[in-house]
Length: 486
Image (cartoon, rainbow, N blue to C red; front, top):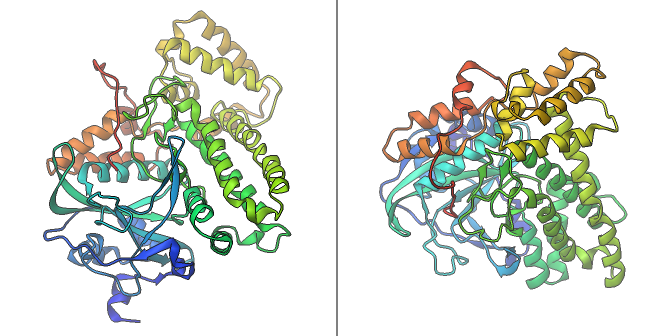
C-alpha cells in the first residue's frame, strides 16, 4: 500500500464497478481553482478510519474539492431513474461523483461521494455544481438526524470551490462529501427494470442483497425477501421521521434508499406547530409530501420497488403481482406498529394497554386544536412542566388526568421518566436556528454553526444550554419555506 494511503487512511474498494456498465459512467475530475475547506467532521473521519489531522488540511481539501483522486478510488457517476412527484423520469448523478467505498477498521463499507463536483453524463444541461448554503444545510441537518438516532447519510466535509454558480443570482459554489451505506435507491431498480434486461436487474438485486442483506442470500425466494426487508426498514425509518416531526419535502423514488437511510436533504425542515398538513417545500404546491402524507407516500414508493422486482419474484407476472401485493399490504401495519411503539415511548409507556392508541390520538388532536409546538409539548410532559398553549384548554386537563392514570400502570415513575427522557429530544434543528447558522457561515463566521452542531450532537441530554435552542422563533409575517437547492 502506498505510503500516502497509510498516512491518510483511505482504504477503498469499488464493488459497484462489478455491476454491468449500464449502471454507471467512469468520471474524470472536474477540478476547481481555489478550493477551501469550510467544515470538516473529525469524529466521522475517525470512525471511517481516516487520519482526521491530515485530511483537515490542504491534503484533504484536494480530495474533497475533486482536484485529487485518493489512492484506490474509482470515480464514477451512478445511473438511476425515479418517480418525481408521481411522474417517471430518467435520472442519474447529475452533479455527484462516487469516489469509491471506504472500508472502515471494523470492516463496514461506506460510499464516499462528492456532491456538486461538476457535470456528468446525466446532468441534462445542468452545470453539475452546488451552492455553499445548501451544502452546509445538508451538513447540519444530516448530522442533526444522526444525533437524533435516525438512519441517515452523513457529511464528512464541505469545501468551497472559489467559483460562482448561477442560479437566480450568483452564489458561491461548494462540494459536500457525503457518506452513505450505499447510494442504491428505489429509482436504481426502476432504472434497471425500464432500461436494463433481466440479467441487469438480477445483477443489481444480487448486489443489493450481498451488500445490505446477506442474511437472506440462502432464502428460497431471496428477491421476495429483499422486498420484505426494504419494506421493514422503510416502515421503521418513516415512523422515526414522524416521531420527531421531520418533513423530508421531496419523497421521490430516487430519494428512497434500499439501505433504509434518509438521503437528499433538499427542501426538508422540522415541524414546529403540530399540523399534519405542514409543507415547507416551495415546489410542493399540492402538499403531496406534507408531514401527514409521508407514511402513505412511503407505501406508494415501495409499490414502485415491488413493480421493478416482479420479474425476479416469479416468472409468471400475474402470480408475481399477487405475491408482491400480499407483501406490500404489510407496510402500513408495520409502520403503524413502529409509530405506536415510538409514541408510547414518548409518553413513558413501556407496556401495551388497549387505551394507548386513543390516548395518543387525543393528545395529537389537542395539539392540533391549540397549535402546540410538537417537540416542546413532549418535553413538557417529560419533565411535568406546563405547556402554556395546551394548559389553557380544559380538555387538556382531562387528558392529563387520563395520562397520569395510565402512567400509574407502569412499573415505576422513574422508569417512565427515563423512557420519556431518551425518547423526546430537547432540541431539533429548528428551522430558524439553521438559517441563523447559514447566514453567519455565508459571511465567513462558522461559530454559530459549530455551536448548533455541538448542541445537536446529543439532543437527549437535556442540558441548560439546550433550553436556549428549544425556544420558538418570534412570529414572522410569512410561513417558513425551503427550496430544492441541494
